[in-house]
Length: 209
Image (tube, rainbow, N blue to C red; front, side, top):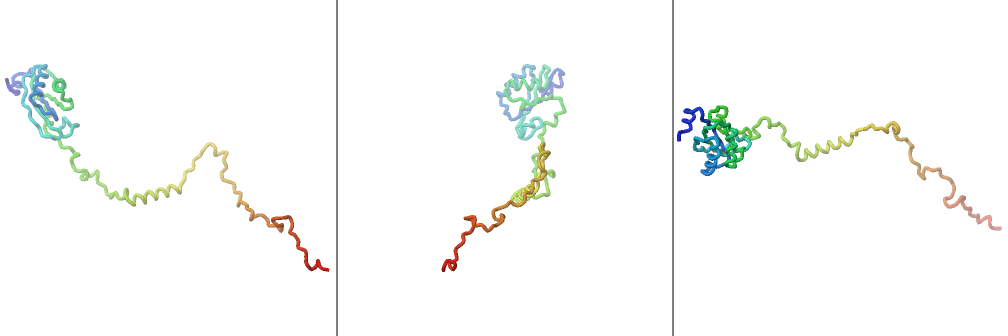
């Protein structure tokens, strides 16, 4: 069987694809399924798989750090990358999100062979946007309690007056009836509290003869 490069150089009718599969070990059984699946496009060559390190890849950005297996294939029948991707998915059961297919002669994804560095890998404290001059102590402990008490005191001394539809018929202010009278404020007379008049006691002098 001719090599992959020979098929690309000798015949323009050969179609090459670069394939990457993430987070799956491609054993001999899985590779046989891929060959049978791509036979629909008359597979004529398939290179050995190359294991890539566990890291973040542009093609699998949503998967996070994963391992990756890469290989190339050549077919005699024309196809497009989504068709090849679908055939591998149907043959092996590997999710489409874990399969990446590109044309072998395409240069737009050449940089995709290299792992990408995640900007979030750097310490958060080193990010200048995350730095602040405040110590943060005003949000915890006694300082936070004192701040809440001041706010409660300020809200208690202030009120909001709301206007309603009954303002025209309500009094503008409450009437001043003065101090309420009690029994101590009533005029005091000479009447006995137990009778209308005080009983007179006869003089012992006048009673003698």
